Image (tube, rainbow, N blue to C red; front, top):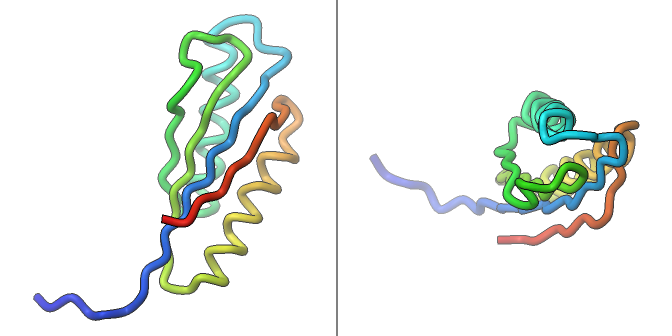
Length: 100
């Protein structure tokens, strides 16, 4: 099989979350799982929690997406950011976008 020489763009969005109403790790995991499931369903992206595993009210979530169309990928990253900002049970501390 031959690989074609088309461009592929890869973006990593890192979201640091504060979950003020979480009173246990179980509550935190429920909120984070809901966010991850929504991102996966809407954007077909890879999503992982990778930080603050032992903190009740903090989380680091990474979202990785790739696409051959850079403008489409930029739009999807913007919509991921908007989704995170609109969720009522979380507050965004920081969102960082990187091109890989």
